Image (cartoon, rainbow, N blue to C red; front, side, top):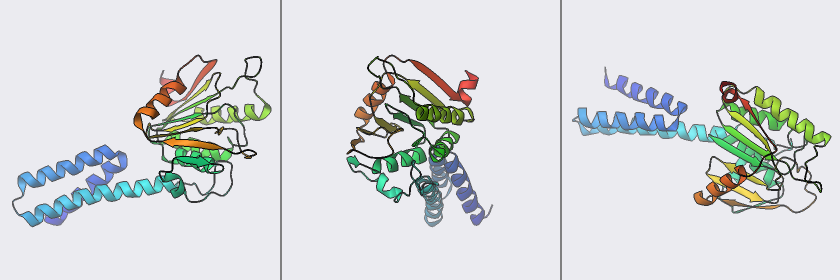
Length: 255
């Protein structure tokens, strides 16, 4: 193989493996680096091959990250125009008002492994066609989505309105079509409002993620990236007695 052939082999292998998974790309880049160190004696060539391996990995990861942020998300989950998702990717600690829908859209676009949405109520004003498209895209990427709802009324029950029934039907239909990710829908006595993305960060506060589309009152939530707090929130939101648990997607069919 000529020198240019080696560069092409490095670039293509690292690029392809990084597109499959970030860690595979890292392994390929490390492998090419070690091979270069052990077999090449000329420092300039070694430097070029090492640079090719790592710039291929970084460039591919940067492209995939930007693509995930952009997605199809020029509109929010309530089908209204949204500002750039860069606003949702910063490290602000507080989320206010309509920014909650931007955060929900962003979470559906960037989640890689697991997404949890806890909302006391459901509504088809939020769980609309656009939301289901984003959910289907996340499931297609292999994301496992956990949705919990079920705030109790005075009788200790959760009565589903017509708009909630339509929303629940849309969620189930989207989950049934998944061939990769798993959609879990849990009904429990919960008044919690929480959004957790890949155990990387969580947003918890007053906002009903799957029902609020009108903002009649002030809404404020806190974002945390502290891993211990995020894990505790996830454990808490998954714990407790449930009225029903339904699982949809490829994983449920194998079970």
